[in-house]
Image 1 (cartoon, rainbow, N blue to C red):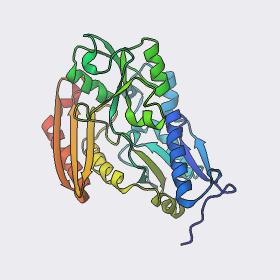
Image 2 (cartoon, rainbow, N blue to C red):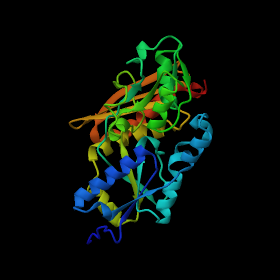
Image 3 (tube, rainbow, N blue to C red):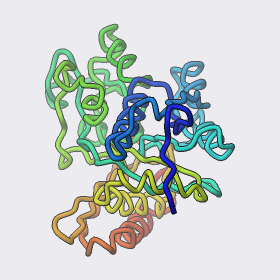
Image 4 (tube, helix red, strand yellow):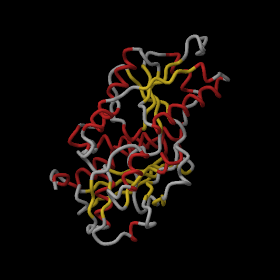
Length: 318
């Protein structure tokens, strides 16, 4: 097959949300494709799509995401545009992505994964342990809330949503003493050195499934997009995410479920650490297993099923 490359006259349309971080991820995708095929940036068009999650987040800024909808909140309209053909590929933060794609769409291209760690962000202190008893911490993440309360049940956690810039402004306004961000987002926005952020090692706070990873979705019958994306796909990231997302799928994970997981590769061996927590942080169940790299997805599925069985039906209800 002769590959028809995009051009300024017929650009490849890249769909994305409109936040500064989402745009940074779309530009990274564009730049990697441009380098891979020696193309000018004008051969690509960034198409900003406002999602239900973006609209609802502005209207219901103080309501938890679980009350507004599920993970599809931030992908539905983008995937509809992809299915309709008004964009050619879609760039996503993988931790926002449901484990199943709509019929006709395929997610099989991942960029090299960034720093997976969470960042503790506080103007006055450097670590969770330094927070005064009863201090207010803001987060919209059920996982971070549960992990924090598991360590510090004395703290008060308030809903804290918005993009990186919005959350930093809320800290300045005194809404909370501290919050959490992803180190990957800070790095992609070139803010890691300017924000009062301390990376939290994964041994202390296991990250969200697929944190730090960018995925690029396409139509399953689009052979041109498939050939273009194959050139920038990072196989190691794909192998790690296969294990983590299989773990999530086995647990039937949603925005209502505090779940954390991290897969790491060393040679041909994949190590997977997983954690599920009660939403109030009162209990956490963990697992840590290794398998051959090619068996990562099966390991994730088995670990997820094992933890779900250990937890029992009432685990997430309290």
